[in-house]
Amino acid sequence: RRLREQALIYESNLLLGPNLETDVILKLMSQRIAEALEAGACVICEVDNKAMATTALAEYVVHFPGSPWHTWRKINEPIHMAKDPIGQQLIKAARPIIGRADPKKQNSDLMWQFSYSPSERHTRWGVVLAVPLEKEKQITGLIEIYDKNPKRNFSPDDIQLCRIMASQTALALERAKL
Image 1 (cartoon, helix red, strand yellow):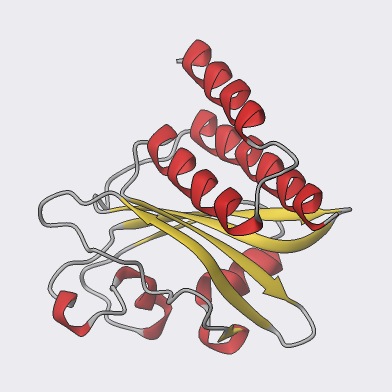
Image 2 (image 1 turned 180 degrees about the vertical axis):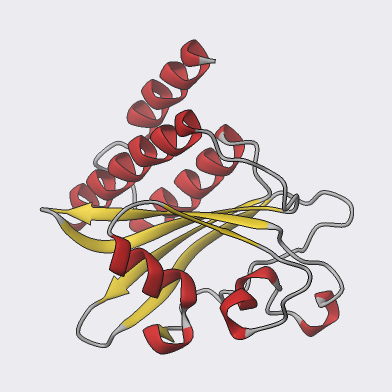
């Protein structure tokens, strides 16, 4: 597994050249992260501390039978922190967090389980791993990794790989802005 992870990190570094546009970087990294963790979806979000909002910039969803076709976030639509349980928890903790669905609960803290599409309300995500994107020890965004299986356990290796990929994403975004 370690060899595969190292190859993935190396390949991602090669792909993330200085000439890529921001949206290409985001799409590429959301796909690479979802595939690396064998997850159902990955969303990369920006955090606007002044507006107290998170905005999804890229989403990659693996279309398995019975899985949602989207996450709960709509691309380029800010969500105020008061309505974003994942963003709130991540900003407060300043470290990776895991949210797990409890089928007995139906409250707003679990809104991340559902696709934003009303036609998909019968399918839901079971677990989410959220990892901060950081620049100079400031949280500038977050990466969310979704899986349909609520019993999925993200291992310490999964979390470490996601942190490395988050660092690569943050650096590539900075280079793209220069």
